[in-house]
Amino acid sequence: MIDTLKGQIKTLEGSVREKDQKINELKKNMKVTKLDECRVQLEVAEAESLRLRRALDELIRIQEDQRQMLEHSREQEIEMKKLKRQNNELYNALNAKMKQEGNITPKSISNKQKKDKITKLTSEVNELKAKLNANKEEELDYSVEGESKKETIQRLKTRRQKHEELEIKHSKEKDKITKRIQECNC
Image 1 (cartoon, rainbow, N blue to C red):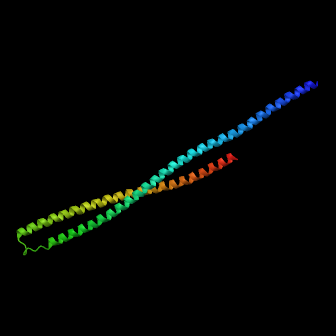
Image 2 (image 1 turned 180 degrees about the vertical axis):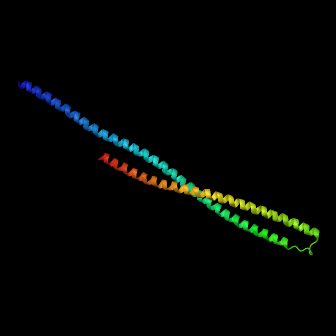
Image 3 (image 1 turned 120 degrees about the vertical axis):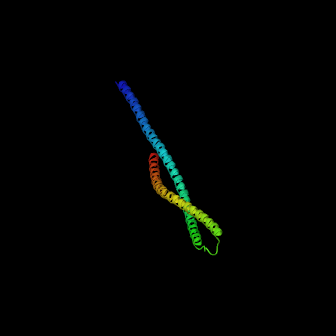
């Protein structure tokens, strides 16, 4: 009977050892599973970080385009002011020529000279009118272009706001990831 009891004790001890090994394996598997979860979270966080970085780079490029468009718009405004000034100068020159035409006195000039002078002045007046009309058309073109630039500037400002929102979101995601990694390391 003692031998039987000793045999039962040995089998029970063997059974306890097996169960202890299974418990230790399960504990190890839990740690491995937790590590695997942390790795997956880290990979997801890295992918999200990369996506946000690309979005940030795109917004930076858009901001650079916006800056260039604003610079181009300023150059166009300067050119438009220059054209307006030239337009006014041509207008004043046209008025001066028209006044000169009105000041021709019949006694001082012969008929042939009158005709030649009138023809010359008429052609100069027509040239000045053509230049004036061309400048007005260019001025109108710049005005229309200026309106589309304003819309573009507004669109770029909206994109800039989105860019700032993405930067904030990126920062928050990075903080969350750092906290999760610290939790996994504990």
